[in-house]
Image (cartoon, rainbow, N blue to C red; front, top):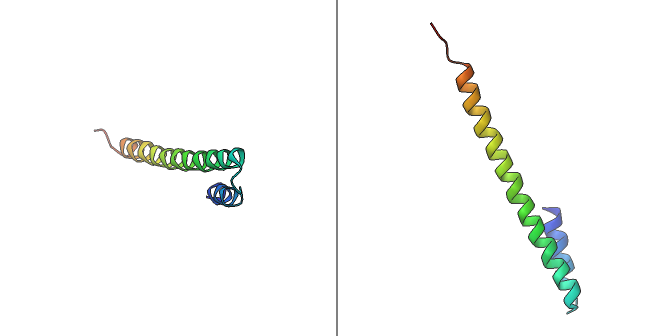
Length: 61
């Protein structure tokens, strides 16, 4: 989230410099990709833990 804010600030203060604008856009893009990866990793870990936890709790006669 912090990098997303930093990218927005860099975009705002770029003053029309095309290189600075492109760097700010890349910062924002990479921040969004990082957030998506973190959310997917969290979801994957929860999915695996919930499935293996239920498999280990089953009793066999």
